[in-house]
Length: 455
Ligand code: 5AD
Ligand code: SF4
Image (cartoon, rainbow, N blue to C red; front, top):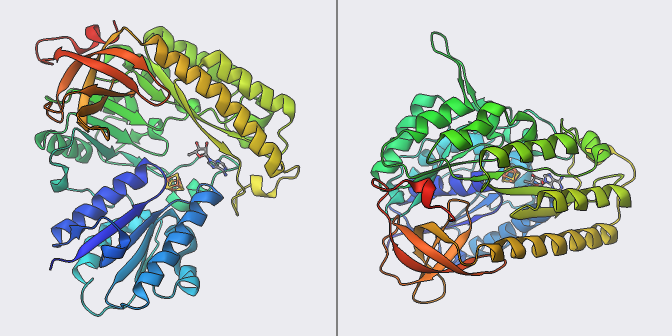
């Protein structure tokens, strides 16, 4: 019987993308995916340490994986991602059965590991941070029958926001050679991918400078990729407000296939807290960016990340956060309780907020945002939009996909091909999705994609 693998992915889109690469290496090595870790010969955890919760989740998964290996030494268990990077060899003390500990920048060595998985081997510990991307440029053979794909364009972060562990586990910012990015985009499109998301921890600080070549900014890169034939939609994530240039904002007007959606974390609405976080902008700066974005692209969806209970956050600071949410009216928000991360500057700050207060602030914030999200989704009822079909919905006889503004739409009928553009009339707006009715398919060659959006 063929050997099977299971990968548990935690954390951000970077990790989702890395897990796709890991799967692909395993499939190329003759492995097949398993539904559950219990059924797998190779069990991997791709981990996140951005807050205490995902870190705990990783430990409990590793406990489970170790228990599976204990009676069956032929199993291979490994940890990759940010926890692997942060703890390295130390993990062997708690999980001595681990065969592999590999940080995100070392993944290019994963194919070598796959070759030795079913032979007697020692343990692999690989956590060098100084390696430059592309540590792993996948050739994407497992992307058949998918509508959307990611390309990593830069890695790491130089910002050192005082709460954040990312610069310590993902290293300094390094941008990838645009020629490699273009080659990867062409390969994806050739495999049928219709929508590409350019990925980076701090994607808008992408820059390529090489001797004898013109400097390429992130806007320049977007222009280049957007012109590829067959690419219906282009996105990017995640942007930092302090690096959101006017040039980049103007791309939302100038680039036809650039989707009207931006994920722009604001983290807090109080200037005092923003300063303590070291974010490099004020609430007024943030509101001004939102205004500029909406001016060039009135239908742009804006989503964000925010946290409550940063050390020293007063009730007034929290009210400032709620007030910013009311002013912007985000399409949706990821919201978190501040979580101490060892080695960061905020960990050393006084005036920590108790868990109860954090909990009630988070609750109030999420209530407010739910109201706004629902109102915004209801406003779309009766409008026409274009959906890129991603597959069948979990509920029977329905297809599912996303609008250009990144909202999930379900609609009846399962005969649509993955990657088709379907015109849909929105009948109902819910909290997490829209329900629609197909009113025809679209030929992107003949029709102007933008003019049909949300009329
Ligand atoms: N505590 C809570 N949330 C955090 N984030 C990053 N670091 C922390 C932390 N120490 C959140 C931020 C970031 C998102 C990915 O995770 O909102 O944008
Ligand atoms: Fe988590 Fe950050 Fe690592 Fe992504 S980069 S997995 S958010 S710690």
